Amino acid sequence: MRTFLKYNRWAFLWGLFIILLTSIPGQSFPKLPGLLELVHPDKLIHLFIFSVYVFLQIKGFTMQPVFPLFRRHAVLISLLIGLFLAVGTELLQACCIPMRFASIYDFIANAAGCLIGWGIAGRVKLKIKD
Image (cartoon, rainbow, N blue to C red; front, side):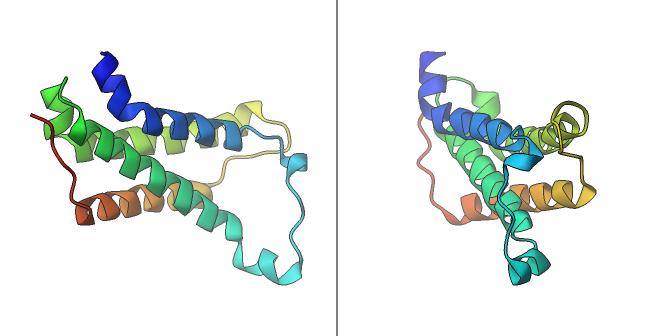
């Protein structure tokens, strides 16, 4: 188990970072100046944080030698966990965080970020431990 955590610690920490970031009450965010509000940079943030998460998760599952099932199905399991986290953070915002609300557009950006992370992981050569 210790070896599994060694390879997946960054994904685990990044997932906690996502939960922490999405749990900040709405009034804590600074207001963006005019033009930046039009392009909704928060969607780019959603894309980024979820693509990094899924990339780290795929990398960790692929490299760890402890659980062969996770290695063989690293992409599918990572995408499912990423989508679960995407839904979970939106539901958390809807019911538990003041001045925050669930948004289908945020979920779409989260899901797209998961797919981008998968694409990046596919382009990077990952060394598999035997």
